Image (cartoon, rainbow, N blue to C red):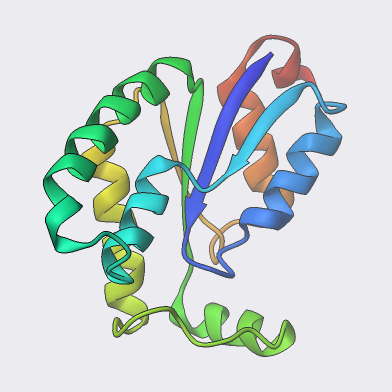
Length: 150
């Protein structure tokens, strides 16, 4: 069984892609919505970790990240244009972004945390430029084996 993660700003297409990959693989792929790097990002921007625990938290995060990287087969990062993002937010009655960051800063920081995690097999997809079907096909191709023939 393959294990993949999908990261990106809210409304970048994570849930849609996860649903379609799950369907295309008949549920034989384990898919995580947001990897450890995204959770780390959200902990940072919402200041969830008390100051006196930040050093311990950083050490624990790095240790867990090392273990996490060893079991992830494919890490996907999604990006989207602000225009498409605004349309999607309106369609889904999505709330504004968490924290004080604007769209560009938020998307850039999610990607920065993702890059710092140094996942071993990375696929970058822009959901403004690609349809969900095209994204899924690229993911299946990257997974290889029987998945590439779906």
